[in-house]
Length: 306
Image 1 (cartoon, rainbow, N blue to C red):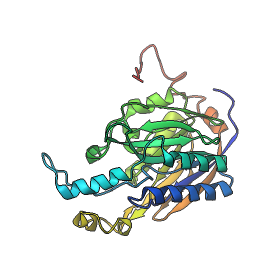
Image 2 (tube, rainbow, N blue to C red):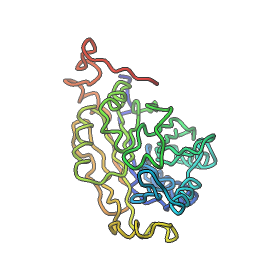
Image 3 (cartoon, one colour):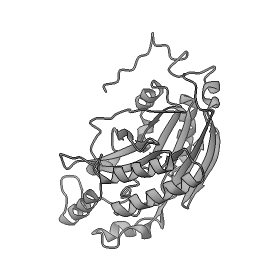
Image 4 (spheres, rainbow, N blue to C red):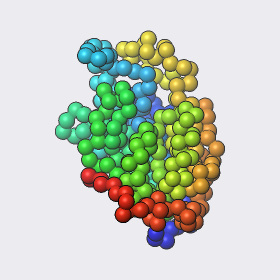
């Protein structure tokens, strides 16, 4: 392992998107990047699909074997508010990262430049404003598959940061054991998890992964409420069935021993700040290094088709 910068000043942004509002989401992200930079954050992490939102509870008119015209209109609205990568929105976010002199990770709905397929994508910008990594979610979960396609490239990209290799797994990708190992094999010290997963079981999962990979697990979830949905969507009955608080958050940071550096934050927007002691990563791997001395490559082998 290369020498690491000893402290990572991180900001985990638990915020609500401006739902179905691409431009407003970008402007809110830029404002929050500036706010985090004013607190000297060097790494700023946003949730899954912050642009233009996670359309929780919406079916877009899909049932097995059929669909309807109103659902198609809502899907097309979501499509129109998804972004090209690269595109004008990534230029704006990259400029904000450069002005902040910070690494910035943010989840977006990516619109393919050639086809009409959408991807659930996580972007990482470096402090010089460059788009460092693009990671598309390997397998959308459940009914997400009617909105976003499977990743067809950019499977396990790594950003080489001063604090070591940094990678991301989007939400339930972290339940894929071999995908986790793919990141471990690249030596990740910072495991980013942009997600929309506010259940109790998830907290047990993220603490396990931090121990398993002996890395810092950055759990960045959304907070949003039912009244934030646009009032002119074509599925009012679906929205009406949602809880008042649709996603409670629960964002936090877990250290390489599985302990909370910051406790989960619930039921509000917040920017969570922490100083991560990067020496804890190497120290924690003394007796267990998942893809090093504890890996038995003579017995076990993972083949990754990148």
